[in-house]
Image (spheres, rainbow, N blue to C red):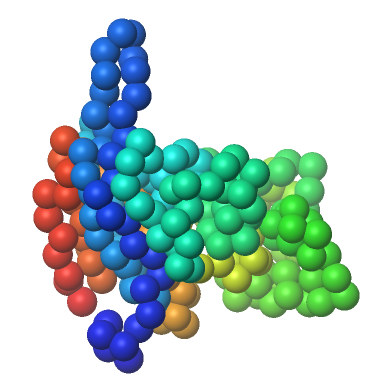
Length: 233
């Protein structure tokens, strides 16, 4: 399917974010605009201070922009209050973090269920759904292992499965391979490519060129603006 016929997964339009730090105004985002269509795989890059962490927080509904629009599923989430943002975050975005953020007291199956529990969706199909996701990421035989019994790569696979549990509009991965060795990094990136081939929209925040090279598109930020936006598929 070509990009032209895919629906828009989300759009940001003239996003700005200013905040005060030690009596000075910091312009973290200065008017960022782009759209991402369903099924795309985008790497967002930029040096320290470029605005990528601020953009991550806005895209993840962890923060609101000072001005501009953020349209997700047709809704301008930039205008929502904290409770509504939390609901959008839970229902529409799958997060994968560098540090995995697994609950140590829960096993693999229970960790994958967390987003469903948060939304009150632990119905009769929850176990089946989460078992299927565990199998999808290659952990079907590790359902009852706790994070301390897993390698770093296995823990990140649990985190990826968890990010899929709510069938999100897109996956937002923040330096998802930052704690992994090169072999495990390749395995995790292979998994992201498989998910993308299945139709999942993926946004990868990274500072590593070799990680970004696996994406279909690279957006580079500098000084709070989009410096370049290049397709490479």
